[in-house]
Image (cartoon, rainbow, N blue to C red; front, side, top):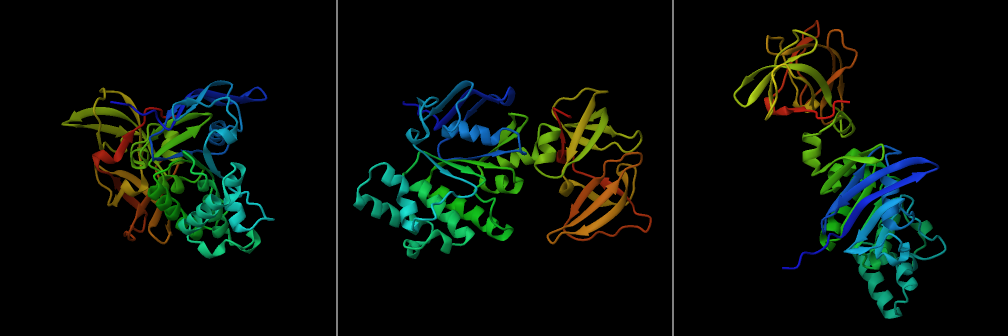
Length: 359
């Protein structure tokens, strides 16, 4: 049985600029046909990783292996990749059709092949009648589609997307997330998406690699990374997270009772495999997992500071005694709050995640 090589394998690739290491030795394998999102704040190393894959930069160490071939020293135009940039990089002096055909022309494709591929690509992005238009006549969303059509015209083995929706307004960006995903599914092409937008990464990708300080902190299915973050950074970067510290007090079946700081606050149950009595733990609970209710013995007592309506939900800002860091609770309907603002907070045992890296 023949085992196919992964479409992309990064083997201990690293990169420094001016003596500053922006990417630590990174190992990463892709799966055929998946969309992998490199997600992180500015300066985390995600764009450098993409440029190393594309061949625009040469790694200080390690190798870039594409479809089983070491491409580390291969120039960009020999790697068989397609790329869509944030500003699209379309040629304003060319028509739409000429832009889409550009890569084919550079490869010496025949006129018949160029005509066939251009029409197929424009049909794919639903801009069949735009072949003779100028780039200046297109909207931002249409330019994005043409940039995608141009990148796919040469039938690349991997498509690289560098903040491809960053220049679009919110509504158009959301629509294009689904369109891009639909095209990727129809073609079955392997894609790497670089983005700093958490919602975009969660919506579009099969796996998310969360990056910080030049390394991947966690990689996995969007649901897994969101629901089960391993570090405080991942839990907070992928959305709002309420962070609690406490001490393991007792085991009750498959769950553990944890005394939440400050002392005497509450002792909720936490689902976990192995903990030790007396162990100090840091927990993360998503705002939508917290339940507002009346103060009681097994609930964390907090005070409501503010309530904001965000269209799809109500956001509650709360405070704990002697703690500056606020808590947040999201509910689908507005909950009744006593005049003094004092409420109780609870959660299901499996809604709290014990962080492996609290800092």
